Every structure is written in C-alpha cells, then in structure tokens.
Length: 387
Image 1 (cartoon, rainbow, N blue to C red):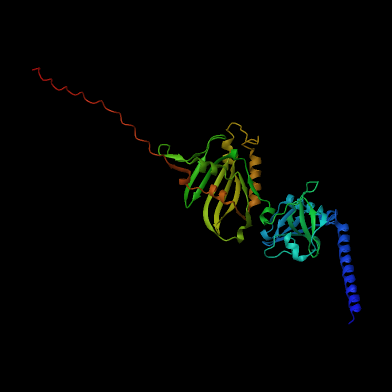
Image 2 (cartoon, rainbow, N blue to C red; image 1 turned 90 degrees about the vertical axis):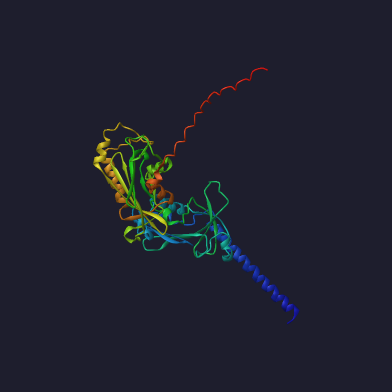
C-alpha cells in the first residue's frame, strides 16, 4: 500500500475518533445541561400520596417499608411491625427534593470510588426504590458517599446514580440514610417519668427482690434489708429504679414465631397511679429479649390518692387521674401485645439484678484502739550508808 494511502486512512481514522469524542462530550454536556440544578425525580413530589412501598437495599441485606393506610407504614421483614411514619415521610420529601448539582464519572470501573456501583457483596452504597400501587418505580437511586462539599443552602450532598444509568452525579438532599432496619421502626415502647414509680420487683430462678418507696421524692429502699448487717449497693438499686422509665427496641419479632430462649427473669414495676408494667426476659443467641405487658391496678391507684400532690421533673402530676392511668396502661399493652423485643444489653443488666447485686454485708467495724495503762511505781533502791 502506498505511503499516501496510509496517510489518508490514518487521517480518516483520527477524524472519526475526533468526531466520536465530540459526540460523547456533546452528549454529556447535553445531559449536564438537562439535569444540573434540576430535580432528579421530578415527578415524585406530585405523586407522594401514591407511594405504597419503599425498598431499601445494601450489602447487608434489604427491607421493605409498606404503606397500609393514609398515615401508617409497616416493615414487611419484621412481621409488619409499625414503621416510624415521620421518618418515612421525611425520606420521601427529601427524595422528591433531590437536586442534581453536577455530573461525575460515567465509567463503571470508577463507580466504586464514590460507592455508586450496583449493590452487591462488599459494596457500601444504599439503594432506595420508591414504588407505586402497581409496583412501578417512581424512583430508583443508589446513594454513595456523602460529598465533602456543602452547598450555600447548607443542604447535605451525596454522590448518586440512577439505577440502570451510566452517569453519576453529585446531588443535594436533606436525607438521612439508615441501613439498619430497626432504625426505621417505631422504637419507643415505654416512656414514663421515673418520678412516678413506687416499686420494682425482680424474680430470678424463684428468688425475689423488691425495692420501694412510700411517696414521690423519697429514696428507694430494699425491702427486707437488715440495717445492722447490710447496706445497699446504691448504683445498682438506682439503676433498677429508673430502668423502665424509657424502653426502646433494638429489634423485634413476632412472639409466636420466636425461639423459646433461656429465661433471665421477670421484673414488675408499679407507678403511684396504678400502672403495673411486667417484663419477661429471655436470652436468645446471647442477647436479651423481652415480652412486655401493662395493666391498671385500682387498688394501688386508690392508695396513692392519700398522698400529697407532687409533680414530676416535667411539671406533670406524679399521680395521674385514674382514667388517664388506665388509658396509658391500655395503650402500652395494645402496642406491645404479641411481640418480642430485643433490648439494649446494658438495660437488660439494669433490669435483672439479683438480691446480692442490690445489697452487701456491712464491713466489720474496726477494733477500738487499746487504752494505754499507767505503769506501777517502782520502789527506789535503798541507798547504802555513808562510810
């Protein structure tokens, strides 16, 4: 082949490469012009009330939030346990406001640098899929690393990529990403001011211990304490007295599908206004789980009517009206019936002390110092007569 022909072919090849590069650059520029500063899910805001499902997937697994009413969401993988409605709503609003800032890499071999590769073992992104009633996706986005740049509006930025598309983006959204399924549930189980409790009883292996106080503001004492021989362990006793004032789940499962576990004990609490709260605790795979029940005891409530009025730390009466206490106990029982809850390990320890954890023998009194005795006077030796 002649040298001139080779030169022509080479020039033609270079020209084609230049045109191809221009086309790619122009396509990226058009894409950037289309999305930069724009909403990434432009149709979502108008269809928020039509959203019926949010799928969350990461390398650790996936879970599904399902709408079962106008303002009620559940998690399918947790036996349809109630999800945190406010948290789900904030997520959907944030996704509807997700705004593209600028395009980033479109090379799949570089997606892992910003954690926007397809979800699989070892990946660190989080995929959020928003679906409608017919199962169609209103939005399907992989959220990767948070950006180190904060916009003028002080809204967080993330690297994101629409699933199935080659272009990644830096985007802006006031979204809080939670990959732990339990963080999306209604976690609060019991919230009662510690000032309202009058007694707690713990039974472990048939042995019982009880702490109590006569009126609000008093210090709890250990029933049956021998003041002459025993003293309370104040830290453990105080921990038990407030252990049920706030209970939040770490995980949950239907009680009828849970393994039996190893019994840890039963603890019962009483408030001055008649709420009785009972926890049956078991160990499953080394973690503490509890069945929780609540009831109203009119006898306890009646006894407390004779107490002087007192207010808790929040300015509310310690002894609530009987109808309010009855309703509060009923609400707790309705919320917890049929469920087994995993509690924080420290809280389980606080809830299950044995009596020996609440009191100890008094140290022996130090011996009294000996009183020194006066030495008996000695007789002087006789002085020999002078010579």
